[in-house]
Image 1 (cartoon, rainbow over the protein chains, first blue to last red):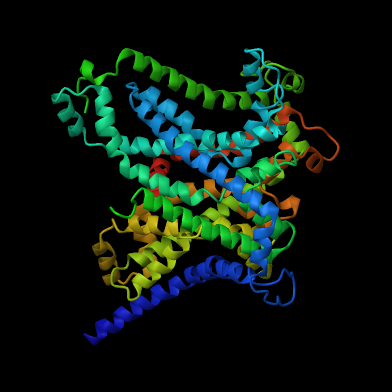
Image 2 (image 1 turned 135 degrees about the horizontal axis):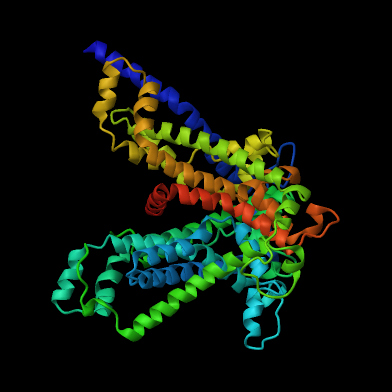
Amino acid sequence: MQRSLWKKLKKYKTFYILFMPIALYFLIFTYFPFLKGLVMSFQENRLIGNRPFAGVENYSLVIQDPDFLASIKNSLIIGIWDMVLYFILSLLFAIILNELLNKTLKKTVQTIAYLPYLFSWAVIGGVWALIFDIQGLANQFLSLFNVDPIFFLAQPYLARPLIIAMGVWRSMGYFALLYTVAIVNIDSQLYEAARIDGASRMVQIRSIILPSLAPTMKTILVLLSIGVLTHFDEIFIMVNPANRRQIGTLLLYVFETGIINFKTGTASAGATLVMAGTLIFTAIIRKLIKYDKD
Amino acid sequence: MAKKLGTQDRLPLPIQALYIVVILFVVALMGLPMLNVLAVSFSTIAKSDAPGLILFPNPPSFEGYTFIWSFVNLAQPFFTTVYVSVVGTFFHVLMASLAGYILTQRDLPLRKILTSFILLTMTVPNELTMIGIYAVNRDLGLLNTYTGLIVNGMISGFSVFLMRNYFQGIPLSLAESARIDGATELTIFSKIYLRLSIPGLMTIGTLELIRRWNNITLVVTLISDMKKWTLPVVLRSILFEQTSTSGTSYIFANAKMAAVVLTAIPLVVLYFFTQTFFTSGVMIGAIKG
């Protein structure tokens, strides 16, 4: 008895030793940066030496900074449009794709739509640079209707739509794939029953497929709501002096303030506010869709 | 499965027609730009710079590729990216599966605390701790080093739980009997658990490789030295900041698109090789958040 207990303890000792590097990693590279950011948001902007505490000065600085306020607006517009469009367009696409009876064709269309999700935002930026060039695909298309060529990427009024469209182009196939898997998993007996009741295909879509997708829709909405205020990569790639005022998001502000201009205190205060904003936003979405009820 | 479909299982004809139009539209919207990029990358300088839509290179040419690879030296960031992605992914898979294995031990005291400890790391998106990550890496001397790019993201809660769930499908009796035969924990881990979990390992490996290859946020947070940039960041300056990368020479559209293709193609190839693992990973990723 005692022997086995001793043996057991010894066995566990190995596990704790094995867990040490893992714990160390998370402490140094996840927990500590989080806390450090929080602490820095209450400290003066200093690169070296000890940073005296500055109370909430950074926060009051940040919320009075017109650049920060503009980036809140940009983040909300780009983030919410992306969220809504990803959600609806991929749902529609998945439902329509499901009606394709030819398996090979279905798979091919799905793969083409999915492919951009594998690409880095820089690659998507390259695609955009080419098709929205003055001689690009978009202008070629418009010339069919006798529209004069537009210099798309230099038009401030087109900056947000183009960034939002970039996101949709990259992510629609991915989210459609999530819906497709849920559709494939629908119990075929439900269709059988509907058939016996004489339900047409349209009725089947409305009363079987859509309700069955409700849990997937909720998961995707929560997933998307976490990302609303954290758009960074595509902005970093596409931002230029002509579109900065339209597409400069919160995280671009944090990045430029903290890492380019070394105002770590101000940037951390901004990041902390974004964190709080994300928490509030996800909480609202969760509440609205009754995510935690079931 | 293959039930005969009656007329009632088909949509009314006008709607069917509408659906086909929508699908063709989406295929064109997704496919044409990709085809355009590919065709321009294989075109000659003269062709790629002339007006007119190119969907097929005529005449085909590697000019753009040789220019961007040797003259602009895309080779260097390409191999940098291969190095940090592959090495980083290797350690990531190893560490995540080790953590997953530890959390699989049902009777391990404090297991719940260890689980929550890892679970908690998944609540805050990485981008939001950018400044803290910068500061910590600076203090550790990891700024502008490849080690920094490899070490950050060495393990993630997502991969740990994916592996733990995978390991939970392996009967405990296998490990028990190996223990009776005197096998050490590390032997059991590597000879039984890892060997029986190849699809799971492939899933987190593929997802991590893609994540690392495409990573922008971490690279621009840690690396300010242009010579150490990875492909996506270099690609950005090739596309939008002519002067800083190539010095005096102008980069033509065919070379720019060659850079785009070279950044994207390794992942497309990887995708077609690991497709089955990949889709399963995508599913789990979505469910777990």
